[in-house]
Image (tube, rainbow, N blue to C red; front, side, top):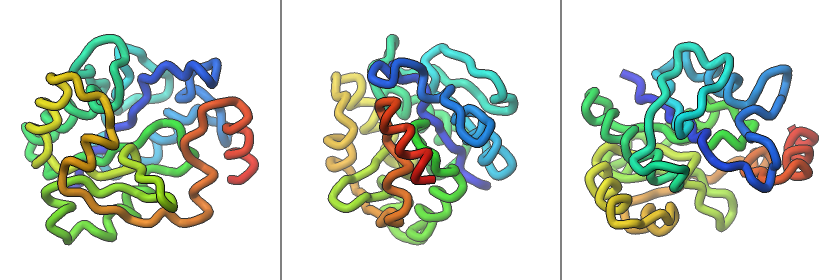
Length: 194
């Protein structure tokens, strides 16, 4: 049973000036491209904080744990609970601000799927010194501690990840420019690099 993919697509995109998930690349919005790539292989869940997007048929929209865009942990927590309830061992997490295709990221993460930490903690891509916990596999084993962290007001993703068993997979060098764009200029650079 292939673990689901959670696409984080409910952020404010304030520095971008328009919703990142609706940016156009290769004739599609980022969110429809990511959804279409993953759906043949696994369930796709969208953490969109009550928004709905075109061309995402087949994906399931999930609520955040907390209202009003309170961060990635609030989005991941209910998805991890649902994955646990449905008998999955974990959840792949992908932030929507990437030109990387989900199945390529998942294949990279799966290089460590036979480790104890993959089964019990968080396996994330790493770009040089930068840990990328929003391009990662989260085990359902951390669902309880994640819910407690969100309930207690912790919104810091890196802090939470480092409090759990975690391991990293080096990101290929040519992927670095394709992720984590926050301004129109950064997005344009990512498109050029792609």
